[in-house]
Length: 341
Ligand SMILES: [Fe+2]
Image (tube, rainbow, N blue to C red; front, side, top):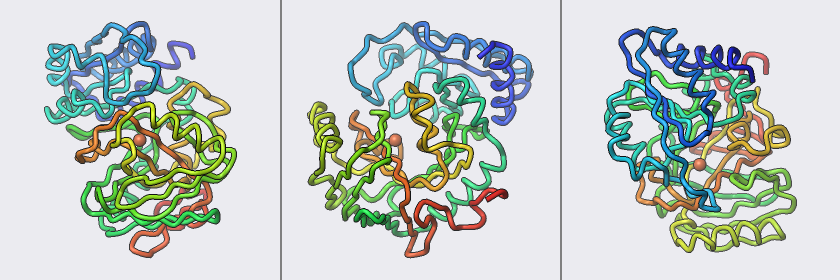
């Protein structure tokens, strides 16, 4: 994307995020990654009258796996202190699940992650309308005591809610200490640590992140008291098991966040367009039901495993306290549907 176009979408982003005169905006990058994004955010912040600085860390050596929570900030406490001083941090590294990000948020700094391809940032630019619908979902979810998910392939699992907060993601952030990720459009919470029981059967076309692949044949997860007891199926199941075993971490088998997607502009086939991205489009597509495994420290829980899978599913039904929210992949609560649906 041309720098001028990137500058423009970053300006829309920072405007939605409430950036104004008198604020300080920090941009964090590493190595040679996304320096054009850094320039665009600095330009946009100055355009809105804010002070801005760009903090560029050295590149971490590749680990061979997507180990969430381990970032170049871990060995740079002075950098963390500098970022805590900003009103807003634009994270171009992906700090999520790191102790450092949580410390920066606790200092009152709002954090926006932006790591997806620029073309996707442009197509899924956040809107206030999407935010409102995501917040309707957040309200409903935060009041619910149970979430039950089913599908035609045999999924029937129940999450006991109430232990953990509800998190909304709509792609921008204008509240102190709040994190968001551009692009996104979904809502989630987590079950009690020993309060998830049942079976999940992934169907062909369901999405494995961070493999960035589509399931080809059914995969059956058996879950008892918040822990995966068994994963069965064909090649996809073998790949999932092999990947998880490599972390050698029992906490990787915990059940993590769970929720549903609300952005009608996001495409289920998104991985065919951006195979190297982080899969935010897949987490966001309208009516997907996403469960995940591994860490729940993002929600304040005790599990900080680096082994994390996000699994958006199609054609599921989701009930909160037995009330339907999603039926066979379609969101049925009118206030959560876009006006053109
Ligand atoms: Fe996740």
